[in-house]
Image (cartoon, rainbow, N blue to C red; front, side):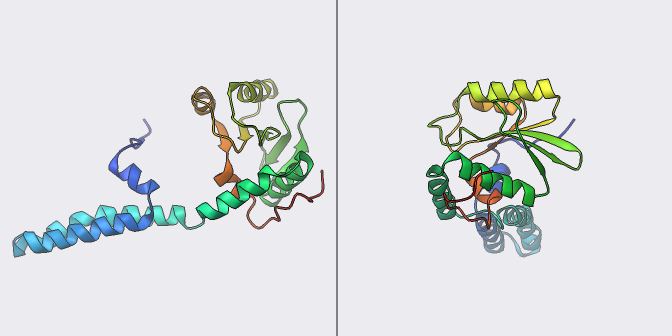
Length: 198
């Protein structure tokens, strides 16, 4: 059985929080132990802050390359003004840079077919500017994936997923890229609407 941390446990929340918060908690524990415990127990008590230092290191490693909120917002704004040919060309460039072989999709539900190291993925991205993402495009992508017997699927859209779409994506292991993931994936690429179409 695979161990999975509870989503709202203290450690899970700290892993999603800025790394320095865990360091502050560790320092507070050390200071309280030094001030309140008898001399012979101070070092042992202070060591109880060690898990928070470990969490801080893990969180810092995860957050080191994450884009800032300002960068995510500016990327979202730039992508929302693009026409499909420019956005498609930008995605194709990013996928190729990351080592994928890129082919156009064969159905309306699939815009790209990717392959890297023998593993295939279907990508739906044409609705990236939709006001919301419901079940329909995810169901179509899942049906195309099952028909093609492809292990991975990716849906790209700036809008949040509906209450029905989010559990569907999780159940069928459909990866979702929104503004933050797109900012990371498109790092270093020019976000101008004049990009050439594929």
